[in-house]
Image 1 (cartoon, one colour):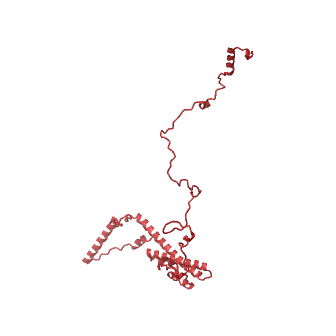
Image 2: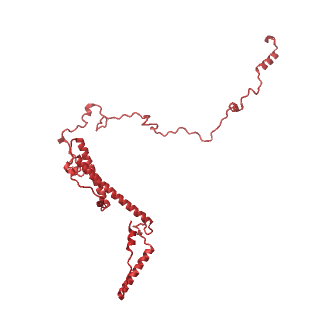
Image 3: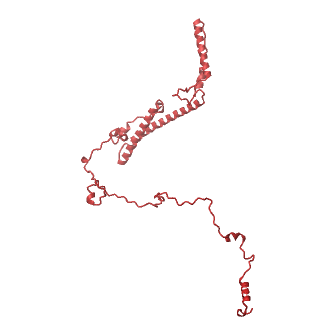
Length: 290
């Protein structure tokens, strides 16, 4: 090739075009899966046509506060200075504060008497209704035996309820005395108090056993009544509904007994002796036994 200084202009331009111009070949094209990346971006809109809402402000200044994490809590200063009753302003001078602070009354004679209720319930925790702080060992030992189950079966619900709470009160009274003796130290009466508490617990166990017996008896009677067609447990007694509905067989038996009694009286009037058969009592007793 001749030097550029001696080359013709047209030939020079054509040579430069051939040098710097590259023909597109298959080796210079990107792979097919990268073609979407070279496309020009287009504007798209969301599915919803409504405008996006801004951050909601509920006006809660305590939002984000946590007492566990100690975050967001503002500094709060509380004034403990006394205030002037006339103006309501806080008093900062010591000379103004001292006359307002109440002074304790050291002399018991100058103190105002405190009125109390003599029948307060807390006095029941002490012997003799609060007249004494502690019972002597002789007084604690003067106790009888506990109630037995045959004796408690004759009591109604109210008596059992009252006796239960009397036992609770007596037990608390004994335990309060034991705690006070242990606090004072070197005092007699622990053995007598424990003996009294044992008898109280026997009575409470007997009351509980009697109530369990009554509950089982009531439950068995309820189950039998549910299976008995002559008993209506859903009857409204106030509305006049009958809880016991006798069957027709029972009514027929009653009519038959009435006719036999009438015939017996008529035969006695005529002078003729008529004997009525005795009922089978053994079978009836076996049926009624549980």
